[in-house]
Length: 452
Image 1 (cartoon, one colour):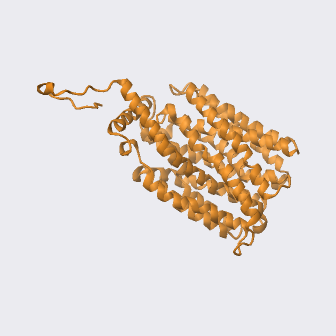
Image 2 (cartoon, one colour):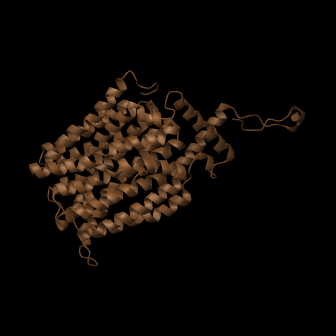
Image 3 (cartoon, rainbow, N blue to C red):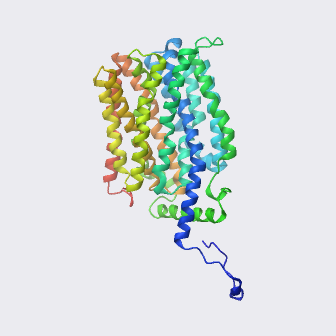
């Protein structure tokens, strides 16, 4: 696309600016990308951080809530896991509506509703009401994760995606690092304040921030580069040219739309791979406080110790994602940490020593946090802009069914065997199916050109 108007030869004496060469365009686009990162990524990170706090704080609340509501491990696992079932029904429609109404409006809507329902969980009376509220929380939050993933693919070229996704996914470890100690303090110090139990205060306090942040999201977020008034006109044009070229490279080898995406077995294989990853992710995330609590620590200490795996995981995740972007390799950058993810569960289970157990949980968390951002880059290598939102949502929908089976199967295993270590062994086995599927797909003759 031209960056200056072409003038008639009769105006040759007017001093026409030459069209920028490719290096200038590249420089303009690179500068625009840097501006976009500084403007958008802190807000995206904060959004996902708050989302992860409100979906996972039930793991800390369980330290006192389970006894208060009379929940068995099986009851708790079911109530936690039911959050994920609504993805099948609501996540794809939510992403379609995001494309129709724009990211800033739809993401702000998601935040308001999930914050309100998260606070309402303080008034659960038993396993039935808790399960209903968890389901509604999932309905409210449906579309957030794939919506953000799709949003980032409209803003950043594929070579930047692993790094960008790692910034976004930093919300997971930061949520644990920030919220776990706060939650532990609330549980130890807010009992019977105002006539409420400490776990009720936990939900009320931690459900407020997303409602407040939704206003900032609506006012501050920009739907796409063409609407970025904070970029100079020449930067905006260079940015659009770069993204169009990036999408065109995908169009030449990818889908022509949503219907073709549905028929592509790679989408379904990625969904199944993500399914087993999410089993491990949710099984670890929701049960970690109780795994640590078995060593008879106070709730505050449990919260503090629960930050250690996530601090280590955050550091390694950033380095690993950056390495993936530098090398351009994706497949093994997913497979290797997935194997580490599995091995960590075994180490955590084989010893009754709190030090060895924490080491295993830390290793597992490092693997978990390092494999997920790289996984998000795999669909973008063959989905076009027309099928991307739906494709991301479908993969996420299939994967997040694992969000039910992870916590539920751990709870069921503990109820049957009476040992939390057996839940860890189960997770170790199930997580292995994810790297196996990705490896087999990478070896397939039908793999898309450019998939590495």
